[in-house]
Image 1 (cartoon, rainbow, N blue to C red):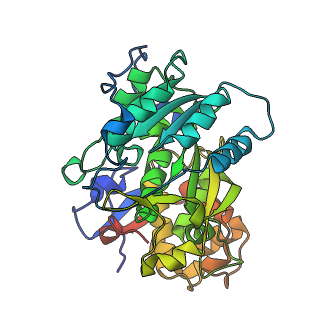
Image 2 (image 1 turned 180 degrees about the vertical axis):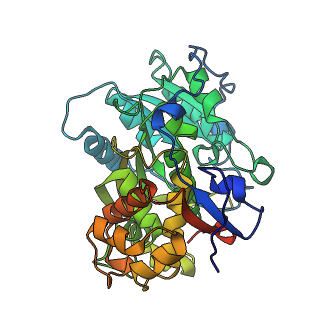
Length: 398
């Protein structure tokens, strides 16, 4: 049930309303991006974090600790590593680019990047790999930094539920001397890695919140992600009205936020997996057979310079998220029916402004249409309060 409530101040965010009441209204008056960029950005030092003491690689009977709760896939083929380096270079000559590599493991890709002139920061969550990774950086004049932390656990929302090693991105980047770039400028660094096997969707949602709010790694600008993802999840990420069964809020948000390129596809069998017993072996479990028949897709996610506008900002992005989640809860409903439950503004007037018909369904709208819809409602001058909000959706991921 949705009802209007009068007297609330402008620009109430979703987080401020959580738990206050079940029926609320969100105000308008989106903040400009320059207000967010005015946040404190201290000068970054040249101090480097203390590395772990070097040990002989042969001191450990295996490269993986036996306490790992789930298997993790790694690039162990030099051929694949060289192919990936060529793909990332895009045919250009060797250039000194900064790569942040997530859980490099045995360091096969790390070595290929270094040999092609890149500077690499290896974030490794498994201590067993670290001595070997450090050995790769000897005599390279600082082109390789090895840090014991997990990229996918940077800036956790609830530290009490996250197992170490965890790290705050601000401290990490400051210690590594990584400089922030304005959103309108170039790419400050490139991240490369493989999404966690069991948490791809959850990881994608966390990164979306970081991106739209300009927090975590995106405090430093338009950080580019080059990540391996399952073929199924990639299809969902790229879905649109042409494949409505896969189309969802996640698809819209990533396509609105980033230019997405498919750089390379590789069979699952090309990646070795370290299992719970600490042994390197090809997966043989029955539940892995379906995955073995799939490809992993290396995708490039580059945040758009034009993502933020006068009406979509890091301050009100959560309202945009709410709008999409509400729409896709009833994905086959007409847009005009959703408008009545989302906003008190004149639904017919909104349809006219975005040039859509009354019979238009949610699954007929492309990502750019959803952004246009949100901005059209946000810039409407007819009402002080623009959005209706039922707070049970706050923690729901659709």
